[in-house]
Image 1 (cartoon, rainbow, N blue to C red):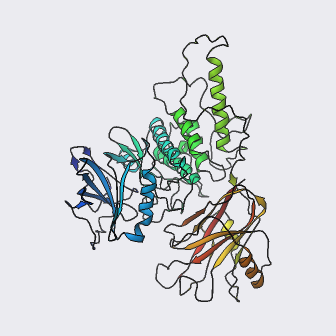
Image 2: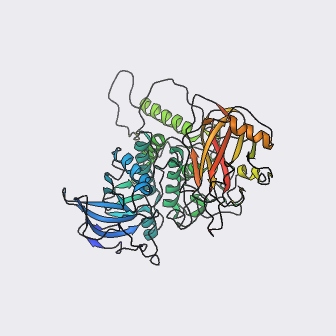
Image 3: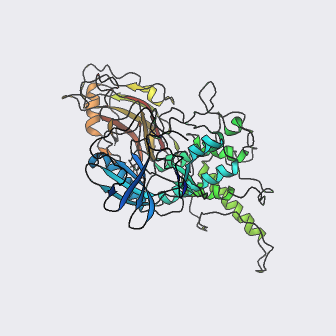
Length: 537
C-alpha cells in the first residue's frame, strides 16, 4: 500500500485491514506533517464525543484522516480534519452538510460537521477495506464483471446525489472504496461549484477505464481539478498514440467485452453527450450480472456507438468515433426497446401466465408518456473569440486568442505578469469574448486555466462591438447578464459555469478574469487560459 505520514495502512485492528484514503493520495514520507496550533493528537476527544485513535493518512487536499470512535454510540468513525478552520474550511463543511442529506447504500454516510475556528472536522462512516486505486495497485486490472459492478455502484451513488440537484465533484479511483464485505461506496464529495453533473458522469468512464486497465485516462491533463502531485494526477497515465489519443481498454488488455469498451470510451469522448447518471446506472445495472449467468447472450449487449443500420467498428483506433445521437438518447431507446421485447415474450393478451423469462434489472422508472426527447447536449462550435482589455492603451496582450478554442491544453492565451493580483489600481480585469455564431440553448461553459488561484465570472450580452479599446469599453459596460455565481480564488484549474437559464438562448459570452494567481517563483501574478468549451444544444 502507499506510504503515509501516519501509521501503516496495513495496521491490523479488530475490524481487519483499515484504510481511509480520502481523495486517494497519501502524503509522501519525506513530507512530515507540520504541527501547528489545532493539530490533533491520539486520545483526544472532539466535541466531547469523537475520540481520535489513529492517524491514517493525509488526503490530496491536505486534510488529516483519522480513525476514531464515537464514544456515545460506540461505533468506529473516520474523522477528516483541517486546520485552521473558519473560511479555509468552508467548502469542506458545506460539502459534508450537503452529503449528509443523501442516504444511499453506495455513499459513505456523513454523521457530523463541526467548525471550531482553529480547526474544522467532518465525521463520517468508517469503511474497512481499500480504495479502487489500492485494489488495482495490489491485484492489477479487474475482470470486466467486477469493473462493471464497481461502475454500477458509483453511477448509482451519483444518481442519488444528482437527484437532489447536487454535484459530487470528486469521483476517481481514490474515492471509490470497496469494503471487506464487497460493498462499494463513494466518499468525500467536493461541492465547490467547480464541477458539473456531466463531469461526474464522465468520471465514471474514468473509473471504468482505470478498473479495466490500471491506467487513469486523464493523465496530466488539467481535468477534474487535478494538479501535479495530487491523487488523480499521480495515477499511471493511459497508453497514448503519437497524437495523444488514449488507447481503448481492448487495445491495452485482452478480454474486455466490446460493449463495455464502447461505453467506457464514449463516456470519455468530449464530443459525445453523456447520459444522465440514472440512465447510466440503469444500463450498468443491466450489465452487472454474475459471470455464470448468460440469459442475455442471445440478444447480445446493447450497442451505443453505431449509427442506425451500421455494424459497430472493431475499435481499431480511438479516433473518429462519432454518433448521430448522444449516449443518453441511444440508451433510452435501447432500454425501451428491450423492455418492450421482454413484455412481448411475457404472454398473450388473455392474461395467461407465461414461462419464466429472465428480466434485466433497471432502476429507470417505466413511463408511457409521449414527451419529446430533449435535444442532445453537445459541444457547441465557437464562431469567433477575442481578448477583451478595456483599460489598456497598448493592447499588447490580445494575441493567441484562437489557442483558447483549438482543442489542445498545451497552448493557450496568457496575461502579462502583474505586480498585483487584481491587475493594479487602474485595471478592472481582462476577459475572453466568445461568439457562438447564432443563439443557442447553453448548458455550461468550462474554462481550463494554467494554474489554480484565479477569480473569474461569466456574463452574457446581446451585441457585438468593434475590436478596439473603445469597443471593449462598450462591451464591458453592456454585458451585465451574470451566469451563475463568480468563482473566487479557485483551488483548481478548471472552472465550470452552469447557471444558464434553460428558457433563454445565448450567442455572446464573456469569461472575465478579476484576480490572478501568484506565479510559482513569486515574481508576480499571471494566468493562462488553456481552453474554453461550451456545451449546449
